Image (cartoon, rainbow, N blue to C red; front, side, top):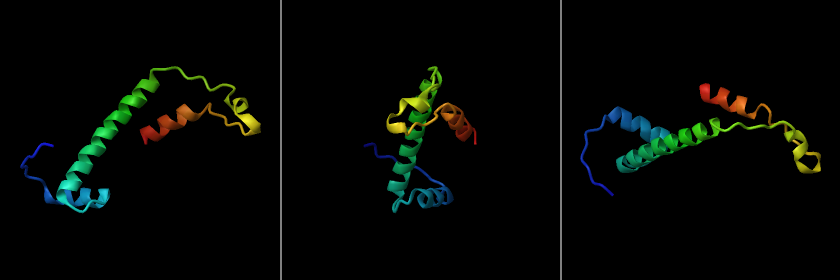
Length: 84
C-alpha cells in the first residue's frame, strides 16, 4: 500500500461516499479507485468481444429440453445499453 497526502474536494468525497456506501474517507477513495479500475477492465473485455464475430443463429434450438433462447439480438441489446 502506498501512503499519500492529497487535497480532496469535500463535496465530491461526500457524494462518492453516498454512492459507494462507504464509512470513511480512506474506504471511499479506495472504493472509487477500484470502481474505475474495474470499469476499465470491463471496457477492455467488451472491446475484445467486439472484435470477435459471434453467430447466434440457431441458438433457440441449441438449448436442451425445449427451453431455447433466441440470442440473435443479444449483441444489439448490449450495444444499446452501452450507448445509453
